[in-house]
Length: 305
Ligand SMILES: Cc1cc2nc3c(=O)[nH]c(=O)nc-3n(C[C@H](O)[C@H](O)[C@H](O)COP(=O)(O)OP(=O)(O)OC[C@H]3O[C@@H](n4cnc5c(N)ncnc54)[C@H](O)[C@@H]3O)c2cc1C
Image 1 (cartoon, rainbow, N blue to C red):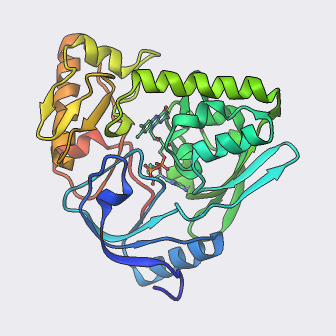
Image 2: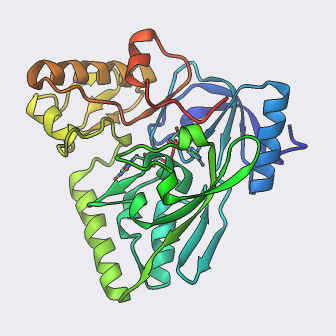
Image 3: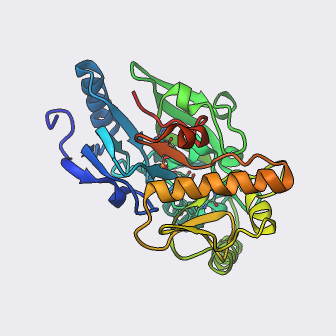
C-alpha cells in the first residue's frame, strides 16, 4: 500500500480519529497528502477489492466498538489553501476554523460562521454544515469530486446541498472546493467571529461529542424537543444527553459506540412518544451495528466501497 500512499498506520484505534473519542480498531489508516496520492490509493484499494472508507476530521462520526475491518482513508493531511481573486480554494482536509481564520487574514467576510465547527472542507460539503443562519451552500462556488474513475468539477447548484445533506455520497469524494468570500472591514469580521465563539462557549458542552446528534425538524432544533421531554442528563454507560445543550450527546468518559447509539434510540423513542416527532440522526455511522441501531443511520452511509 505504501507504494500508493506514503503514510499508512496499521492496527489503529479509530477513537483517536473521532471527536467522540470512540471507535475500535481499523486494519489500517491512510493519510494521503495530495489529490494524486488519494486517487492512486483509492484506485489501488478498489482494484484489489479491499474494503475502505473515507473520513474527514471525524467530527460527525460514530465508529463502532468493533472498529472497521478495512482501510480508513482520512483526508486530514490534504491541506492546500490558495487565495483567489474572489475567495479561496481549499483542499478537502482543511478545517473550517482554518478557512475562517484565512478569510479573516485576507479581510474577507462569509466564513465567520465556520469558526467553531471542527469539520474538514470535504465533510462540511457532504453535510452542508452550518451555524448562525449561514451554511456551506451560501459561500461555496464549486467542488472538485473524484467518483472512483475520474475527477469532475460540480457547481454548487449541482451538489444538491440541503439542510445537513447533499448528493455527495452518490457523487464521490470531494477533493477540493472553491469558496466565494467578500471583502469587508476586518474589525467587523473579527467581532462577528468573536461573537460566534462566545455563543458557542456559553451554550455548548466542552466535552467529547459529535455536535448535535439529531437534525432539527421543520425549523425547530432537536435539542428543543429533547429538553422539553426532560431528557437532559439522561445517561447510558458513559454517554449522556448534555446538561448544557440537549442536542448534544457527550462522552462523559469511557462511552462506547453502543452506549451512544442506545441513548440515541431512547431519545428518539421518548420524543416520538411525547411530541409525535421522529428525530433523524445527524451523525454518520461507520462499522458494524445491530439491526435496531442501523435504523438510526439509514440515510447516513459513509463514503465507502
Ligand atoms: C463540538 C462540535 C460542534 C459542531 N457544530 C456544528 C455546527 O455548528 N454545524 C454543523 O453543521 N455541524 C456541526 N458539527 C458536526 C460536524 O462538525 C459536521 O457534520 C462536519 O461537517 C463533519 O465533517 P468531518 O470532516 O468531521 O466529517 P467526518 O465526521 O469525518 O465524516 C462525516 C461524513 O462526511 C463524509 N466525508 C468526509 N470527508 C469527505 C470528503 N472529502 N468527500 C466526501 N465525503 C466526505 C464521510 O464519509 C462521512 O459520511 C459539530 C461537531 C462538533 C464535535
